Length: 113
Length: 112
Image (cartoon, rainbow over all chains, first blue to last red; front, top):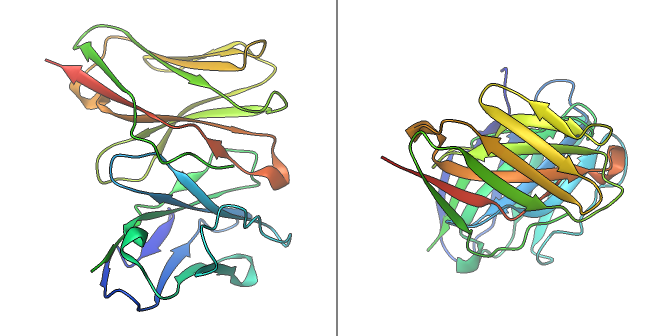
């Protein structure tokens, strides 16, 4: 597709379950970001992938959160043992090289019940 | 970089007036700056960008001003319209491995 694609668009899960969120960046983009956004609030940085470099994981809120980027393209964000405070919109963005504008997906709205 | 999860400040302007949204960026070495607009239920969208070798850049109805001395970025929107109602974020980067750092965001409300 032409833009950043995220799936699922909505996810409702029970507390304690694991969830996996997927991001398909724009083809050829080397930089990929994950952000979290709670209702009415700003963008909370989670993790940043740039090419083959080790990712910047400094924003991951706990060890229940992890992310992978396979083959420099698709990325998955995994949240283990979900808690209610994990409920938020998870946004993915990609850019050519981390030095140009990042394009965002529409996000995955996660609700933990 | 990260954005603190605080409730967003709000700016309310009358339709047709000009609005100015301000942003204090964090890193004096940042070289590239972007303004994003986020409408309800959507991901942020690019509005305008500026490199550190410039002080001002104009687009259609929008102008970005950069003051590196005080690490300040502003977005001016001329003749605001109802469709301008959104949350506006500034972002900065050194480039390459450093990625984008977002500011806290401002909620712009256009009053009829």
